[in-house]
Image (cartoon, rainbow, N blue to C red; front, side, top):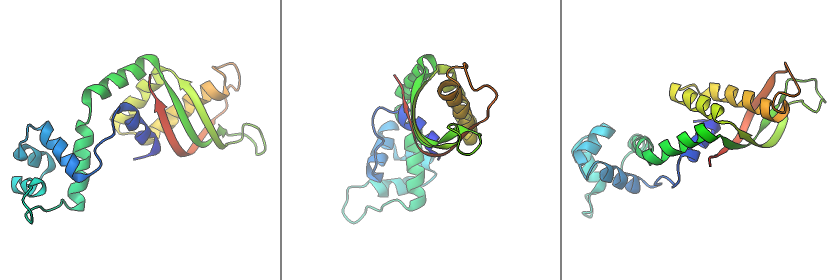
Length: 184
């Protein structure tokens, strides 16, 4: 998962996802009304395995293996705050968002030019149309497409000053160190 994808995920949540395997299993059990059978079906393991993971009996508890920890994490992320995520996505698509990043950014210009790609700190408001494109690309599984969308939007807002200058130049947006999306 790239920096852009992680930034979008963080922006859609209001509370942190449980970090330990025990807390994640408790969340999955609560989501499925305490049914170890349903949790086992979601994770692709037997009901008895889930019972061993959550039992309180001393000596009977077995921790999940590395593959199961990954599956548990993915299942929790898919079910974490669905209504909050939908509300925040709708708000970003309607009102836009502020994008904070540190990345190599600039025009494909001659070396030494002020527009030459270099590491820059950028904080820029981007409209809701950009959010719609980002979420559509995310749903389609196109990770690299998100960089292209952000490069075009940042180039328009940051360098081209809303279309008033720098026409026809190609944007370079690479080496993303971090990406933070501020919604509403």
